[in-house]
Image 1 (cartoon, rainbow, N blue to C red):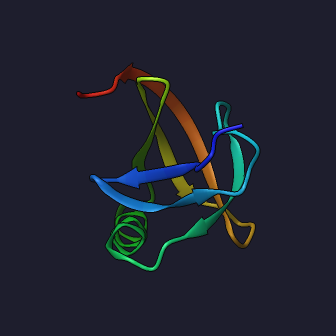
Image 2: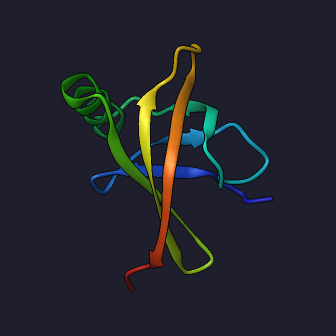
Length: 88
């Protein structure tokens, strides 16, 4: 289990996933939002064009994924995962 399942948008922390481990497959995921610029900016982006690309870092890798608003309250619809080396 990851200690903190934090994810980011444009370099700003958005919140944490309320899961046992980071998401790795398409689906709706429950999360706890931070009250800050990252979550606000994510909401503005989704409202503007319908989706955004967020990421998390784990085991030296950066995992990016597409985020859309879910019809389920308190969840994000996540898809289109990609992996790259985490910048050092």
